[in-house]
Amino acid sequence: MMRLNVTQRVFLAILAANGIIVLFMFLIMQWSMDRGFLKYVNQLEQNRMERLAIKLGKAYGVSGSWEFIQQSPETLSQLIGETIAESSTPPPAPVANEAKQERLNQPDAPPNRRSFRFERRIVVLDARRNQVFGSSNPAEIPLFKPISVRGKEVGYLGLLPSKFLSDAHHLKFVKEQKLVFALIALLMLLVAAAISLPLARLLVRPLKKLAAATSHLSSGQYDIRVPVDSDDEFGHLSRDFNALALSLDKNEQARRQFVADISHELRTPLAILGGEIEAIQDGLQDLSLSSISSLQVEVFRINRLVEDLYQLALSDVGALAYRKTDVDLSGILTDSINRARPALAEKSLILSVHLPTEPVFLFADAERMSQLFDNLVNNSQKYTDTGGTLDISLEVAPSALIIDFKDSAPGATEEERRKLFDRLYRVEGSRSRASGGAGLGLAICRNIVEAHEGIIEALHSPLGGILMRITLPLSGGRQ
Image 1: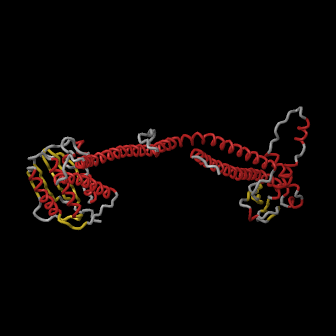
Image 2: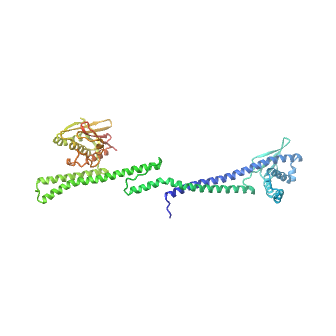
Image 3: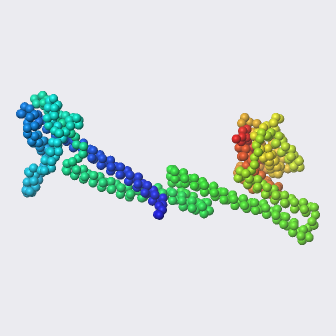
């Protein structure tokens, strides 16, 4: 079975639509021709009826009654023949063509037959509407013409309208016109076919470009772009394709960077572990509690990185469990601050806390909220210069809760703050691997906040560092 491509399908669709239109036009023209020409013929016969009524009136005036029709019906036939001669003018013929001139001068059979058919449909009534002549039913005749003699109606003349064409000349004319209509319809169909093919190619051209670009995109060429030449559906589709290609290109670059960063994060502690174990095996370092503690630190770093990656992966796929209840958010934040006080004091950071005195309830997951606050407090503790300041506040707005973590220098530029929630991203000079961060904590924080239908932002802190602002709706994601 032959499979048609899109161009051929569009071509056939356009051609079929034009073919149906041409067919309906042809049928309507044929119907209009039959009906209109029959109406025209009946109108001509009505004009003959007016002349025949005048002749019958004159014949009645001579005879004085309608007995002349009953006694000699040929008189009516003669009058009908006179009306045919008056309504038809023979075409002029060359004098040299004697044979043709002779045929014109002789009585013609078709007019006689026409006269006979015309006569059979005539009905003549007297003044009292009694039928004088004709075999047709007067009730079937819609209109009777009065026959007058010196202003007095002496009878009525009626004609049964023709329901179909029967004259040979009329049928020949209609047949010729229908043939012309058929030729015109065929010509229109050929013109439509000639126009449809280039039109189909023009319509499908943007689709072919998109198909070719999609093939390149599926093979990994994410830099492919489609030119946008119009503002129609194809133009919108091209823009969406370009946006998709750009997104895939950025995602691929992020994936490569992510794999490279993870490899580097794992390679550093593994290299330290390998070096220390090798030194112990070669006898260059004693197996002591201090060496074991050093190995344990590196193992802890690897374990923490793997756990962060696992938590982040669960959050991305929506598999991270959230058990939401009405919890006191102010109490959870206070507990996180108290757990971090020793580390903050060790780094000589000045802690300033502004929390409501009354409990602040929110429909949330207490464990995930605790994880969120722990990450943010530890983040400020690690990346704020010694002797700096950390200000934590909780504000209850009419429709949301606003939690701010403001720390002192070092700060970050606006571009750097936009990337803080990207995975494995660290601001150079302030965030380093030596501080123990892998660059995944803020990404996990963003996922937790978004799971509670909130927003987390990294802004410039008035203390010179970074302001982490969390906005949580009071509805708390209640379903």
